[in-house]
Amino acid sequence: MEHLKIASDNYVAFTFFIGTMAMMAASVFFFFELNNTSPKWRTSVLVSGLITFIAAVHYYYMRGYNLETGDSPTFFRYVDWILTVPLMCVEFYLITKKAGAKIGLLWKLIAASLVMLVTGYFGETIDRGNSVLWGVVSGGAYFYIAYLVWFGEVAKLAQTAGAQVAKATRILGWFVLVGWAIYPLGYILGTPGGLFGIQLVSDPAAASHAMDIVYNIADAINKIGFGLVIYALSRTSED
Ligand SMILES: *C/C=C(C)/C=C/C=C(C)/C=C/C1=C(C)CCCC1(C)C
Image (cartoon, rainbow, N blue to C red):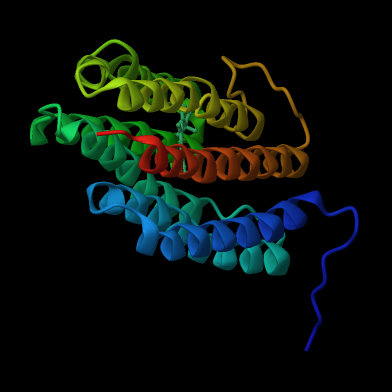
C-alpha cells in the first residue's frame, strides 16, 4: 500500500483539504445554531447548513480523488454545484417569500443556474473544442441570475420585504456579482483557449491546477459567506 501524503508545495491538495475542513466546520455551526434561531428563519439557516454540508461531503471525496490521481475532480465538482447552486436560489426565494415571491421565480432562478452549469460542464469536458461558445452561453445565464437579483423580481420584492431583507439581498447580490465571477476566471485558466483563443496557462497540468485552486477559493467564499449573510439576517431582523 502506498501512503499518500500532501507534499508541502502541493497547493491544490492543500486547498481541497482546507476546503473540506471549512465546509465541515460551517455545517456544524449552522446546524447547531438552528436551536436558537427564530422559527421564521429556521428553514433559511437550515438551507445554509445543507449547502455547506453537501459541499463538505463532495470536498472530502474530491480531496481523496485529487490526492490519489493528481487529476481534477471535474465530474464531482459539477455534481456539487448542481446541488448547491439551486439551493442558493432557494435562499433568495425564502427570504423574499413573505414579500410575495411566487414559486415561478424560484423555477426561473433554478432553470438559469442549471443552464449555467450544464453548459459550463460541456465546455470543460465533452466539447472542449468549443469551450468559448459554451462559456459564453453559461455567462449569459449567469448574467440573467445577477440581473434578477440586482434589478429584477428578487430586487423588487426585497425592497418591500423590510430594511433587513433589502440589505441582506444587496450583500448576497455582491456575492453573485463578484464572488461568482471568480468561477469563469477558473474556467478560463483551466480550459484550452478558454479566453477567446488566448491561452493564459500553457502547460495543461499547471492550467488544471490553477483552475482547481481558483474554484476551491471561490467555493469557500461563496458557500460559507452566503450562509453567514443569511445567518446574520436571522439574528438582526426586527419583524
Ligand atoms: C457553490 C458553488 C457555486 C456558487 C458555483 C457557481 C458557479 C458559477 C457561477 C459558474 C459559472 C461559469 C460561468 C459563468 C462561465 C464558465 C463556466 C462556469 C460554469 C464556470
